[in-house]
Length: 108
Image (cartoon, rainbow, N blue to C red; front, top):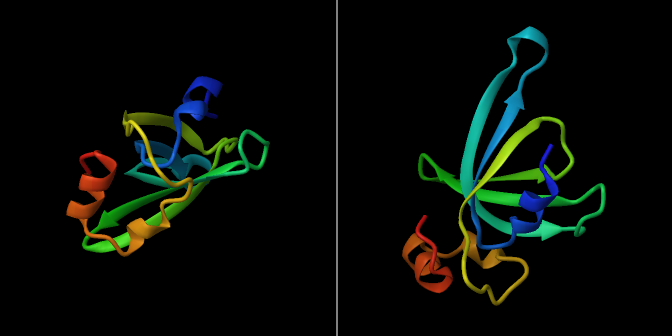
């Protein structure tokens, strides 16, 4: 579960590291996914989600995490931009890394 203070800091443009529980039963393990938050949906409602995008082996990977999921062990905010002009950063999908860093002011 994510505490309320951290949930408020998860905003589009923030660089986050999400530690999640993967697998079932005794064979479960933890997995870390580090990337850029490109969307936050449904505010602070119980079904609220946030989308994280990262480049893994040259391929763009997006994961959608529910805020109230018991499988999320922790979320660490690595950096946050000063100001973002859009609520949904879907333009990041087609942009280069250099352009993203220049527009958002966040190092990926």
